[in-house]
Image (tube, rainbow, N blue to C red; front, top):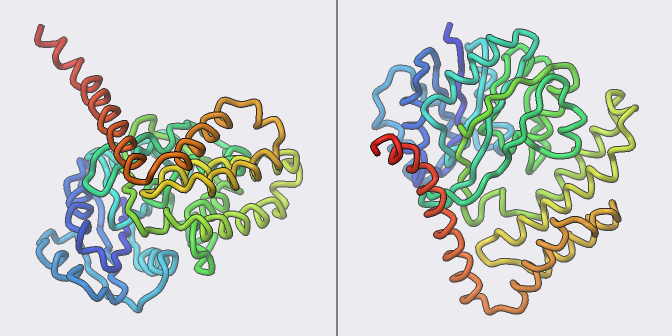
Length: 330
């Protein structure tokens, strides 16, 4: 029995699936099985996968379903003591499995482990950090406020714990990763690897750009979470939870390929409505400034400016990363 089962849902993923699978097969930890679930793709996904000859990779054809259903199919077939999921367009650093498995071994009271996440663009270039929070132990209150796990490509959990909550909720069109992490956090403790190991790819037209779907799913998830007996003593967090959700959506609106300034303002007003104190925060004024800038500038100039800012940030980050090696040579 492998220590870890890796599950990748791969629907019409020919553009990225080879790179994603390679990031798994190159892991420093070798004790895993890789289940790639192909839910009736109509492109070249299957052909891309058939090029791999590693015996740990198992390609499984399945009926078409949403991401939650496809992940559940993989979970049902998993044999590992621990299970982790990876979207077909995301990437892992080479030590992701090894570090998370070790963190769980070092913290036997924990059943779930996650790492830090950075966002990349369609070509794999760094954009910005997604989340670098480091909560451990009982994280239910923190998860109510913010999805610090950041995506379904991050967490590793014991198969027993995942099966005890019956996997992912297939009725959710979006944010099923937050929902399952909240369900896990009800009874299970979390461990963390305090470094970036997940590269979350932002692609135009993906679920992460469907703001309306994200809002509806998150509202359902939060309502259900606050109705759970586990949250009886946490009702005072509810206004901040909803405010943080709308703040997050404001930022997402500003990060879309065609920046939606008016949409960002709409969500910002909701964030303030739920938590009036938010109006006095730096985040509020950042959103306001970016939204008005997006509204006042032409689309072409706005995209050019944002591209220049990203290129500058990437250059600064590359310099910062290179500096230790340069110093060592001096």
